[in-house]
Amino acid sequence: MFLDAATSLISRMTYDAPGAASRVTVEESYSDYRTVKGLQVAFKAAVRRGGGALIERTLRTFDFNVAIDPALFVRPS
Image 1 (cartoon, rainbow, N blue to C red):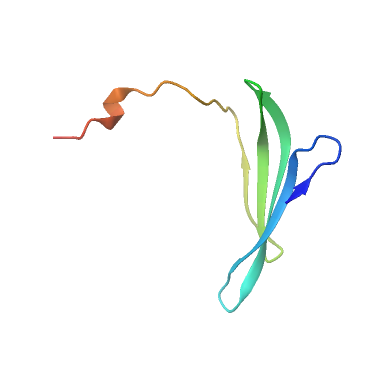
Image 2 (cartoon, rainbow, N blue to C red):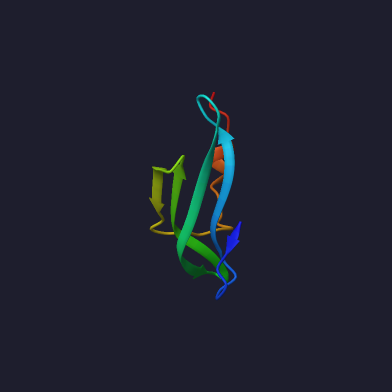
């Protein structure tokens, strides 16, 4: 895990994961941190596997501790 020296926020993480023939290095990088209700959230992230781009994501909105409609937990009949 790598922390940004100026902000102490996570800038990237690396780890080994299973690959087709051997283990490969995966790197996740985080940026565009914004404060959401006092919590720092990385609105941009990128994942690279074995040196190649795997996925990039950008959050448009983020919220937490929101009310969930109880109907979502009703088992269909």
